[in-house]
View (cartoon, rainbow, N blue to C red):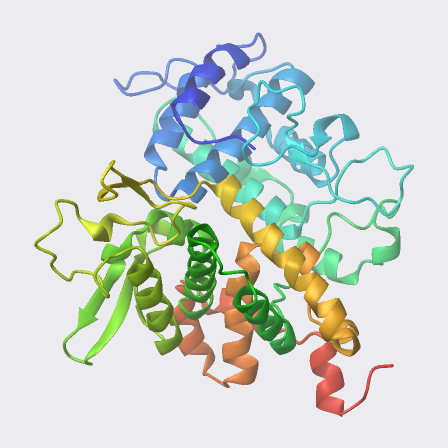
Length: 438
């Protein structure tokens, strides 16, 4: 919802009050030369020190901006008057925000747009509910974690004397929330007082048949003109890149072909990716991905493999983004490549994959109608990240790789994150019991 850019900081100057009236009993010493002067500066100072991957920065900016809006518009107070009870009230507010705070605004909607809302609306089981959403356990955990980090930072900066998040009730501990969510009756989520938030979703990927259908959908794309060939080769390369390298969408959009490197020790190509928290991981390039890469580059008149010199060129071909826009290069009047264009935007990438998944869904219904009821997830509810989930589950369930290998492949810091993919789906249980679904 809220982007991480210079425009956000400009908007904050007008959206956020400098220092709301109210109790300031928790004011710090303000004796340090780097101590923020007001709440807005405290916000910006914290975010500047949390800079990292764009997704992390957006997450911190979004969560803190929500908190500021609630604090100023709902509580009419400033940071220095926040108490542990206020923190608990805010987390309760996040668990079930009012409909007026929820909308269908997407990730690229600006905060001054009339359609923008702090929370994204999700389908409600009870249409008469006054609540607009049921966020996941992970969402509440993120909000709690970011607030703890924020207030701890302000105490160290001398802006506050004490940390209100240090004394919140155990009711908001992650383990307690997860337990309540797991025991809840999902049919009454909007009416149950014991249901704090919906369970953390199990990341489900495409089934083996769905993945086959997706590849067939790409292979069936028309290739009668240059424009159609351009779409085909890009689709084949990007889908196989996301799958065989297990990349996040952001990783594909922020890396170029320079990420491809030849490993002399193992005599093979690899991808060197810097993911969340700038964590480095090396991913051997699958032969299917290498084949798609060669075809894609050959179509655009590039050397077959990255880092191959071409004496006739004045540009660096390897600055080409891994996830390129429709037309990746600017050409001059003679048709020569002049400049590589920037990577595809997040919004354009999401729209592209939705279109491709829609075609695959129609193909699935037409050619694999008997398999539709056995699929792990609907194409219509899939995203770019679904492909990463698919690769993880295929590595674990189909290729039988050790979970530690999958952890390293995906770049997870904790194996608990990778264990989410080991949760069996209902289809997996049917297969195990050798039962046919009607």
